Image (tube, rainbow, N blue to C red; front, side, top):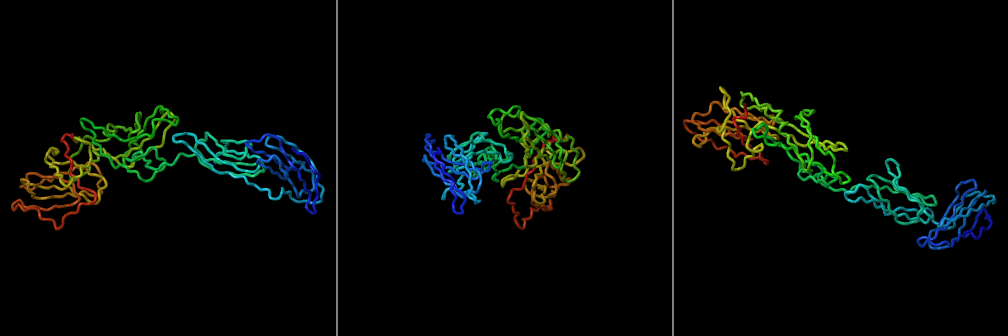
Length: 479
C-alpha cells in the first residue's frame, strides 16, 4: 500500500516536505476506495491528515512546510489495512504543514434531516444524509435536554441513514469525519400539529386536535330543577380523552372525579367518582344538589325577593383517574344553577317569542295563610340594566291597568318570589305576569274603563331577546 517512501526534501526556506503514493488492490466498497493518511509527531501530537473516497485505486500525496522534528506517518485504506512509518526532518525551518495544493478543507455536511412520527405511534424515526470527502465519519444522536445518547453510528462512508425507535422529544445529530471536522443538526420528534378546539366542554371539541385555534363554542349556564317527587337527572358532562392507553389497551380502573363548589367558595361541597363506560360520559348531580336546598320556604313580605334557600349557584370541575394516575383538573367555563322546583320539563328561563302569551299568575298561585299570594319565577343571569315584573290587570280580556315592580340588575340569578299586589283594581277579574326590560306601568280608572294610553314611542326590543315570562310553580313546591 506504501510502495515508496522517499527521503525528506528541504525546500528553499519552506521547511521539509515528503511526497508519497498510495495504492490498494483490495475490492471496492460500494464501488469506491478509501486511501488516506494521518501525520503526527512521534510524541503523539496530531499534525495533519487527508483521505480520498472515490473510484481510484491510487493517489499521490504531498505534505510540505514540516518543521524540524520526528514524525510518524500512518496510512490506511477502506479495508482496514494500515502501515506506519517514522521519519525525521532537519531543515532548520519551523512552519505549519499543508497538504497538496488544491486539496479541499473540511467539507463535511448534514442534509435532508427528516424526522417522522406515524399517527398514533409512540416512537418516531429519523432519516438524514451525511456527505464528506474524508475516509469516513462517525455520528451520534443525543437528547438535547439530558445529553443522553439515543443512537450511535460507527465509521461510515457518505450516504443516507436512518435511526428508528426515537421517543417524542428534542434531539441533536452530531457527525465527525476522519479529518476531525464536525457538524450538527437539531430536530424534533413530535406529533403532527392538528388545529381545532381543544376544550372538551365545547360543542365543537376535536379530540384529535393538538393546537387550539380559538374556534371553541363554549356552553352557557345550565339550569336544573331538583327536589321533585319524580326527580329528573341533573347531568353534568365529563367527557374523557380516550378509553385506551398509549399501547391501545383499555385503561384499567378508569373513573372521573367530580367536585361541586358553591359560587364564590373555594372548598367543594361535594366530591364524587363515577366509572367510565364511554368517552361522552356524564354524572347525575341531582341528589347532591338537592341536599343543598331547603324545603321550608319563609313567606315573602316584600314585592320581590330572591330565595337563596331554593337557589344554588355552583361550578364544577373534573379529572380522569386510572390505575396509572390522575390527570389534570378541567374546570367548566360557566356557572350553573339548581332550583328547588317541580316543573314538568327541564328547568330553563322561558324566552318569550313574538306570539308568546304571558302566563296567568292566578292559575295556581302559592298562598300562606293570612299572607298575600305570591308567584315564583326564574330570574336569569347576564341581564343588562333593570328588569320589571309586569302585572297586567284585565277585565273580560280588556286591559285595565299595568303595574311594574323593578328587578334591579344587581339581583342574582335564581328563583325569585314575587308578591302579588294586595290591592288590585276592583274591576279586574284576572292578572297576567311577565318579566320584561321595559316598564309600561300606568294607573287605570275602573269607572271610565280608560284603555291604556298609547306609548309615545314603541319600545325597542334589544338585539338579544331578554323578555322572559314567568314559570308557574305547583303549590306543593313549598311545604
